[in-house]
Each structure stands twice: as C-alpha cells, then as structure tokens.
Length: 301
Image 1 (cartoon, rainbow, N blue to C red):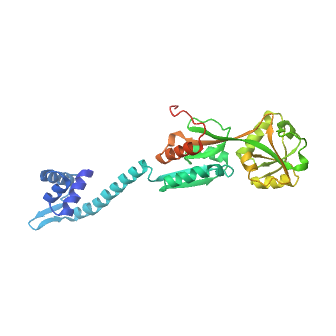
Image 2: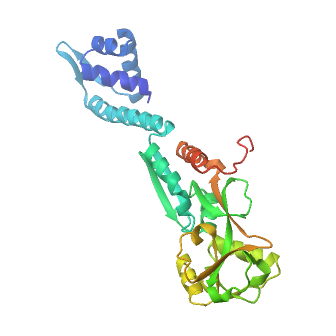
Image 3: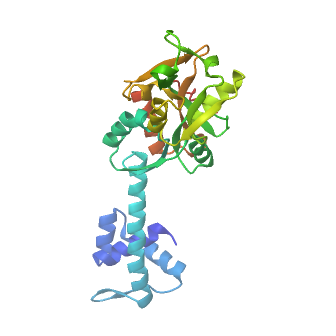
C-alpha cells in the first residue's frame, strides 16, 4: 500500500473535502482524486462515497481510514525516533564494567549522563574476561578490561591507563629496605590473589610464568579489600594496582611496587567495530575527552 496515497486519503476524510485536503497538502485537487482512486484500486474496494452532503466512508473505507491514521502516526513516531537517535537524543548503551575498574570510569560516566540524559545507560558488572566475550559477541556495545587480551578482528581496543602493581603485606613480612620489591622475591611466598576469573589475576599469572615463578597461592577472594585484610593478618602477600593501595589504610602494612620487572595493570576500553551506534560513538568521544589514552587509528579497518 502506497504511504502517500494513504496520507492523502486520510487527510481528505479528516478535512472533509478534496479542496481542503489539496490546500493543506499543497497539491492540486486532481492529484488528491488520483491518489484516492489509486488507493481504492490497491484495496480493490470503494473507500468513500461522494454525496451532496459531503464525503461518506464505506465500511472498508472506515477501516482503512482508522488503521491508516494509526500507521501514519506510527511512521511519524518512527521518523522522530530515528532523528533523536541520530542526534544522540535517545538510544540505548550497554556497557560492561568489571568491579575493580568501574571506579576509574566514574568521571566519564558522570559527564556522559549529563550530556546525554535521554540515553538508556545499562551497566553490567562482570569480570574482564566476561566483558571481552560479551563485546566480541555483540551483547555489549563496549566494556573495560585489563591488557593483554586476545586480538579479535571485530573488536577495537583503546589503552586508557596504566598503573603499577604493588605488593602488600604485614610490616614484618617484607624484608629489606629497598623502595621496591623484585618480582623474583615472590617465589616460594604465599600470595593472596583475586579469584581466577579476574583479569588482574590473569595478568599476574602471566607475569609470574614469564619469570619462571610457580605461584604459591595462600588464598584467593572475590573482594580486593579482603585480600588486603588477609595480608594484614600475615597470611601472605596481596598484589594490587596502585589506585587501590592509595585507598587503603596502610598502618601496619608494608607496601612496595613490584620491580625487575615492574608489572603494569593496563586498563583498556573495548568496543565492537561492527556494531557502532550513535550512542556508542558518543560514549567513545566522552572517554577520549575525559580519560585520554592511546586510541587506534580511526582509518584502520
């Protein structure tokens, strides 16, 4: 069914005459008559009767008129929603935020919400590896994780920040006066790590393996502050990035950055290049402006 014919027909009935419809739509009366006849041909029924007292709808004409108005209003709403989405006045954005990383993105989230209040922002708290999987599958528009990650053709990566990993333990459990703790010093020491589904633990195991150190796991937890509590109790050495060291009460603790080599907790923003929406583009712009970082060349495929 031709939408223009439907619009001309409904306007003719609404205004009550061909002449008024032609004036309202800015076309000739003959054009209105032609479009109404075309619609009747498409339907295969007479839609209106031209009588001395005015226009009268047939039964079929009444159905076409009322349903036609619903269709035209729905199309008008669709066009408005498309315009709103294109101007980022509305839309949906699903982001994956690992619990340990979300604090670093609070400023960007605040600015995004202030700038685009009508976008439905859905935050999913899940581990870094889960974020990587969900972004690659398209279930999330973007997310954050810890490098290194497996390279995938459809996933773009921007490195947002890098923080050195520190060792945390009771004051009597870290010998020496050096300002740093050599990575090799962790050999044969009980380590207190986050659970294996955390990207930080993946990073630590990767670096320990490169140094030919078989980690001696004293305990693992899903809460970073509990790993600090266990280290304070003398159960072993907790390993956390510097931003978390700055948040704890270091009284009674010895805290030193890992060195020789240093371990860097590198935060990355991931997004699916095949599913870029206007809302996602707006989020990427905010992150780049607020957080900076190292971004891929936009001309790369």
